[in-house]
Image 1 (cartoon, helix red, strand yellow):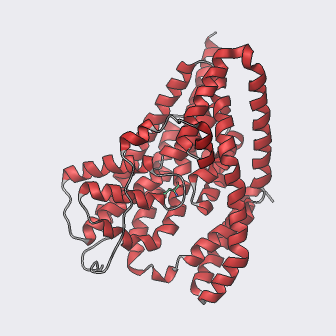
Image 2: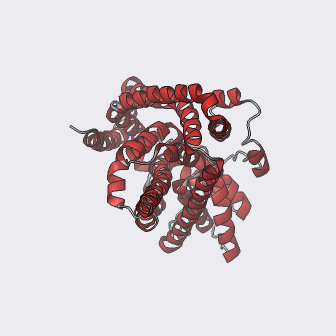
Length: 410
Ligand code: ASP
């Protein structure tokens, strides 16, 4: 049986067992979770997370060095960031539009008298920018600070490219290290169906599905926006900009989407999303290694959608009218908040406090949605990594077309 088929079965079984467990007595859930689901899921998660830092570092050094000249890196960087910003804005507009249309937070349904939420303060934006350049790269690796690792790897990659022959040995060493890690991803990927099953069943089992009730409309709004963005926006981009077939893209990238869904972490899924993009979609290694790690860190369209819908939802619940300038403010701050969201479970919700504060909405509103966020996190993470892969795929396809054209004309 192919891996994709196995993963599909694991997803279905995981959802079914998870729903069953959420309805079963708590003791049944806790015993199954403690002794089976949680250990299996966590071991799988640790296995892939173990590879993230070395893979990001090694593949970005190779990718940057492989591009040859820094100018080319600049061009790809600019295209990548532009794509990320434009798609995130589109995601926000879809989220806000649907929240207005479907009115998930209609007044009168929610009791806000007892809700409490302690928000954490977000780091100031200037500090985040300064900190992209690490003062101690080993520290960055030990703590898994993705942007710093990316920056350091780009510097080393440029040096290797410029020094050429002088550093041919190191280049070869990195190539061999890359082989080792890609081999390991392949091996670990074979366990993905078991890991995904355990993680999904555990997450759904603990989510308390019977508590959804009044939140159903909020969830439906977020899910609909995620689906529209995932299918319409990305397909149009792949077809229009990359001149490629969206169906081929979704089919090829599906295994990574399902791992993103089960782990709720763009960062942990990175080794698998890179391998899947390179092997199933034929994305050039140099492009995938640069675009996807960057995307897993700063490009989160799914998170942006949740933040947009949640903001409008909270305004509706507290019957606070939003002006047009507020909407623009939501788009600006939610873009920043999604960029600042780390690719690990649940951070999108923490960063939502920043958006609410900016608009002057009650941060306590987060307490209303916290209970259903775990489920939505799974879906939005899947979309987050799909957005990164879409960008890598388009840039890679464009490069291939350009190369073909230059070959034809010469
Ligand atoms: N879990 C998301 C991710 O890793 C981030 C979030 O929205 O909480 O992409």
